[in-house]
Length: 632
Ligand SMILES: Nc1ncnc2c1ncn2[C@@H]1O[C@H](COP(=O)(O)OP(=O)(O)OP(=O)(O)O)[C@@H](O)[C@H]1O
Image (cartoon, rainbow, N blue to C red; front, top):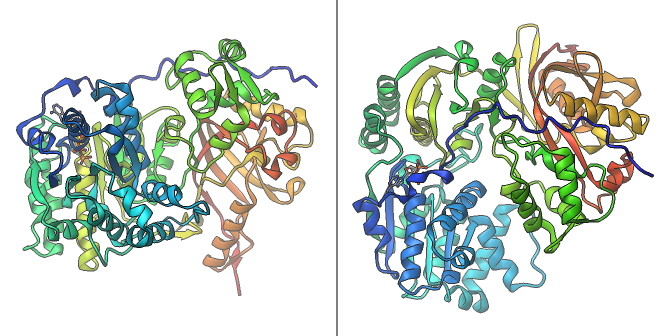
């Protein structure tokens, strides 16, 4: 059976999209010399154990990379150096920067860079044939900790490490802190350790919505001080030249850290100082005019609910979101290339033909050679053949490899994001919305809020504006944000499981292959769309069919979303659950990959059942809808 390629595929690129948020990787200033504080850390003896106090924008990543270069120059083998960082994106960033810093590409490859959780996993799986990743990161850390404490093979191997670098150490608490301390205790005396931390940026609550997920127990920094680590500091700020921002980065930081003042008073002081030093005051969220901001702007909110509100006020302006709970954004070029490729193998020449037929240059589109390298690194079978089954398995993971995903959700426009999701990032222009009061609640909560506010204010390189976020009360159903509004509720749409392959090209969602093809064609023709809506539809078992304003069905939302609506009805004491969700948008299209062994594959129409690649809208919405009657 052949499948004609009749989808409009020439619109992949968009050359109109200009520069976006500064991604530090490409910053030419890396050639710049380190400042004196940086030099002290970079050139310290390989066996030194240093705790480096480093405020925002003082170049921790820069120094970590140059420290590695200096260690290698001093004879430390690259493969015996570990760099452990917090987030997957940070790991990716370090890997890129290291490749640019080290002269020998082989060295850059050999240095072992991992998140704390994958570091733990590599220790565990390296020594146990039966090691299984339980899926629960905390459990995995606990299991590895007991190995580090008791298993002599594991301990011997750790003793081969010659230098350990730990970034963002201020956030490492509880079992993760015990784990790192246990490793430090095992290392040989000649193994050095360099730890970067900024207590003023510690955020222990993992999510944007938690007040605090418990910072009780062991803190890594306390443990390192108790073990006699030497102290160093990076104090020169490189992120900005703005006198006002420098005052925030340095002066306000001192206030954040001054625990001689009560948290309540300090919260008000720090908030007041940030407002005073900001370049502009922009009023409440409803005055936010995204259309007037550049692509380089980053709008920061405290909670996901605030992001959804700001996004819905600006639904007619293309923008991107950055927060937790969204699906991974595998770029559309992958789906466009492979949605109808049924064979398991793809040769380089077939790839070239497809690429030239289907992909136009443009923003976010790699060059043909870069694309091949990415595919090859993920699923190369030989220099000239890619195994697409392997590629599907890799891209179907809940966390596909970082080079294959965009950290933002959406294809163009300024970013609206949570402060949590923007840790370690920077942007030319930041617009930070502050809650009305900072410093309330328990002492620990108040301190956390002060630090979160400080992290937000220090993301700007050139310009900081401050606005007021309303501090609206919202609830969550299975992580989905919802809140009461006049006449009903507002409900988050677009969470990672809201639309899946079955809802997009499945036999239950579309009676025929032609219908599914048409729906995919609509998405590709108009990747960015306003005013989509979803309504319960008898033909799809009363699940919610997703339609364009012209009433074309582009998919069916998941059963899980329908279940969440039932939960919201129960939580609000009403019945029946909402059956109509208006004001949903598509911020672009992304690729969904289906594992070759996924049994749900059988429910898909051809060619997707065989190819395992399809396209999905990037859904965003804080849909305002009616509730049913009060339950009696
Ligand atoms: N010696 C240097 N000369 C010039 N620019 C530098 C130097 N060191 C760092 N930078 C630049 O300063 C900026 C901040 O560096 P980096 O992102 O590494 O800071 P950081 O300490 O990790 O910040 P944060 O804690 O806020 O995430 C980057 O844009 C980087 O390019």
